[in-house]
Length: 450
Image 1 (cartoon, helix red, strand yellow):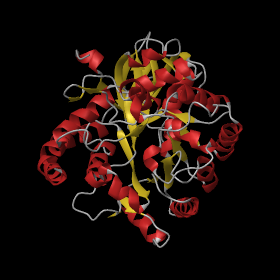
Image 2: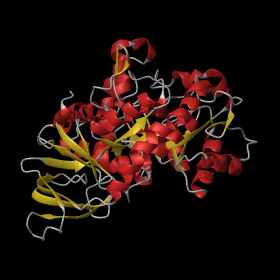
Image 3: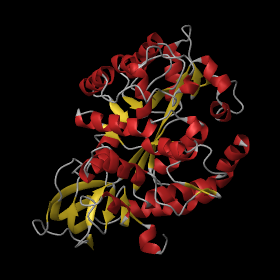
């Protein structure tokens, strides 16, 4: 199936690229864009600013200033947004695109649905980099309407690749554990070469998944950083504890429930028990958990909470998770936030909900539901949830200098809303239109969709 999919990439390249090359050329010559009379929520966590103008030229924001305080550039396109609200483009910091769709045209529709739903960037957390790299090339250069895509190369112990069908499906045609994007690591691995080959896939980070010792985690992380790559990891790597990852310099820990293993007497080597922690007896504010969160704050380690998938499993497949997983996860995410740990927003899915017949392209992206959980259960204000889904997401991607807030010099990624999200986080779904790289993409709300 993967071979057929990659062949489809080549066959569909023509129809994807040729029509949009002209559009890209036209966009390069587009006049300046002014979004006027809008209330700006800039993603920094600060208060909304009413009656502002966002000036955009090309792909970037050039200035944000009070309405009428500067002359309108000659020939500028002016969008009067009186009564509207502008937030930065949302970032889903944990997606898995590979396997979500059957062919390239469907992926194009999937990515456009994410963009129209307010998502202007995603962090793909492991899959078939042959496909993800192709999609990223199209998305990041605006050859298709899609969020920008940053993606990983995964590293794990050898046993993972014989046990996990997802890893096998992502490396069809390549011996298990040898693909540059799905690499088995042992004490004898040439880490300089392995990291260099991972970087050669176009990945911006490594993902450390399972069955790696603390010593190997530390060595891989050091080499990745030396070669200019970030390191993103499961919050427990089995048998490596969260605190050992933080000490090693891992940049982002994924999945709040996996933090429970910090307080376990022993951490098993089998990663398949990862969601079966003792959520009943380990208190959310246990000394080991509090010390871990303090260390994360001090090291600047980001928590990629991903609450939505565990809620879904707790409700529909409770045998797959430990009893009490959601109450514990909500409480620890709340405590992390209160202690000053940066928390991003990630869906741990394709970014869209699934329906009876596959991914629901008419649904709002799951990032909105994840923000709502942070507000409803984890003590975040709506402004703090928006900050998590924008500025913190950009930091998780290693791209804070490019995106995540509305500010001069940043990419012009903007979501325009018809209702105030600082009063009700659910208003992030009230999308009028999306601007990505300075180009307006209509929302489904505006062109007749749901």
